[in-house]
Length: 570
Picture 1 (cartoon, rainbow, N blue to C red):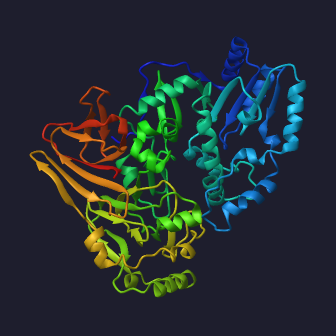
Picture 2 (picture 1 turned 60 degrees about the vertical axis):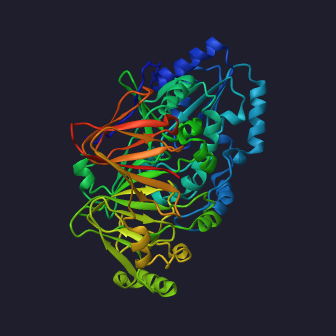
Picture 3 (picture 1 turned 180 degrees about the vertical axis):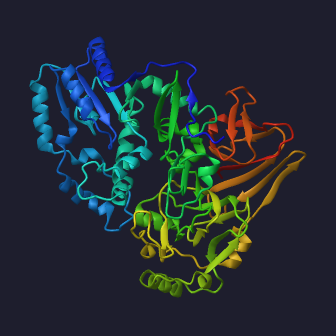
């Protein structure tokens, strides 16, 4: 019973205005009520605002209405500046520290101010930086989750002030390294004070609520367990397990990924009398980081959610690419990243002969390995058996993958990937000579990978430190707690909780992320009645905010033994 549209049911319904026409009328009504003369309708890049602009002009003819798009430098000029951060690399750039306002033309801005000064009626600014170019009496924010922007990129949406980005990977790269960091910085200044918030996830049904209602109900997420809205993607190596187990995406050729625990990518839903208000889950982190993450984690990671859960499905599919993640030093110096992609593979399910590639064979010379990987890009052949350690895996194995470890999931596995970052620093070294679903080769990044491959992480090291390093921490009748990782080089602690009765847990001064990896159904209870009983079904990832402090887990069904994997920051 994996739920595809989880959310928070509001105890106290809020006023929701639906549709561009109704939203426009509501804005004008509020203007008349408050005497507002300057309105900023700030927009996240990737949102089409022309319909709203047209409606405002139609219903408010006396107003000076303008799109901020006309204030910016040309797309070519903007590209020249940000190219230093985007780099010539096909996949990777450096996180830009530039903001949108830097690219506003001083001449265009001066002309605008002259118009505003001589205009006697209301002024309405729409678009990116609307709240920066006027001093608004009323501030409105248009928002959208990243997964929806990515869908629109695939359908033809161009980047904000895009110049020459044409295919999806180019658009995504520009968004990751420039647009989204700049948009998040701007949004974090607006969310705490906006008067209205508009959900633009559905292009045909915009939904507006009061900013105070948005903030009040987002705060509720920090007081109880919650789930994110998962989204699924096919891939060249994808499998069939999630299609069958979760009854989703059956019209797709396969499903490779499920992102169900990545707040920067996923969304959350407020259920309001049958109306869904959807927004990026990152809004919780942005507004209430200490309540969600805890002071300790916030002090180390800021407003970044530091734990990621996602699925990799190769059941009846293919091997993932042979890959490696950077060391912290390399990630910082080359990409401006604050931390790196340490991770682990938890085998949720697999077939009898499934295997995982982890580390290198003993006594391998890095120079020879890299040389043969580079030759393989031309010859189409790479002797993985000569260089790469392989491990036969079974259900509930846990394999730890600190940065620098060569790894890959083989076919016929379902991996719950536990990672310390939502960013996409995966250096592909070998992709088995295949083409992607679009018929093009996937980019190989040996030029990065060769600098971080750690040949000390060989088969001996893997067996001693990375494969099923399970320690029993606590055991009594009906309950066993095991430490399964991660490695001491990584910042995440994972515990496997095996129980057939109600057990008590603490958040350990950190946000907790958990998944029901065995069993049909559990409930999360509050020993202090802080929140209502919360249901979790097989395969569902859920989050316990640090603010909860204590919670109980109980199997549904007398005597049934279940298994939960719990992760938190050490």
